[in-house]
Image 1 (cartoon, rainbow, N blue to C red):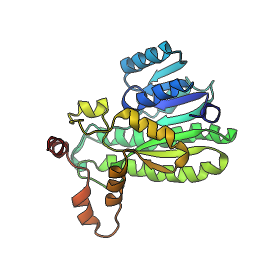
Image 2 (cartoon, rainbow, N blue to C red):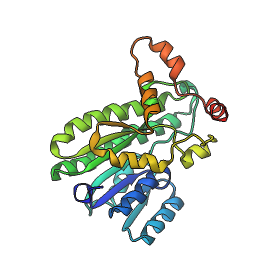
Image 3 (spheres, one colour):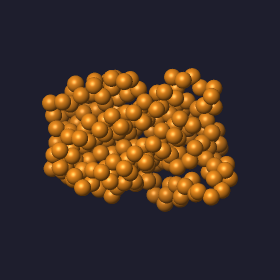
Length: 264
């Protein structure tokens, strides 16, 4: 990673485990100073201690990203430093069900973290980058963003916003010297997926996803991690004609069917 273009500080939202932690380790190894943000305090403390033990300068903040004051609370630890790279990988989904039957708190949280959160953080930190004429923004998405899926209405809608929003942001920021990338993530072996009970035998390692994001930051607006199989899934879910049949055939499957497919 180019420390001069994207440094000296990187802010990682969702930076306590999984893909976020992998970004943190890779950036620390490249000489970046880090600000890690996530809701759970113990994993933040553990990762920060690990990175500091390797010589990195690290700040962290335990923040509930679904709250309206999330950006304000993060700014409390970043307003005195130069954030040259924003990596926003928060936004995993842990509740599935018919939208009309869900507790409103569930879908409001999904929308707050992925839609409002990405917009607010990109607006604030992106403005500074554009003023300086350098920097990078990575906003994470999902293969589910290419198609609405039963039991995932708010999640798939939020991820679709992220992808289209990032495409527009990329077009606006590129002439100002700021690289923007929508990192589209498929089935990845993260702790969040493990907690949901998925068999992770066929999942992509989070380290590989983070490396693809760093390698392709300048290749925006969209990069689909995981190789040709995930590119093909995106194509299948992007058809315009015969949309009803496409959704029935290619929508994000249930956890049970994923597990059955992995077991073979």
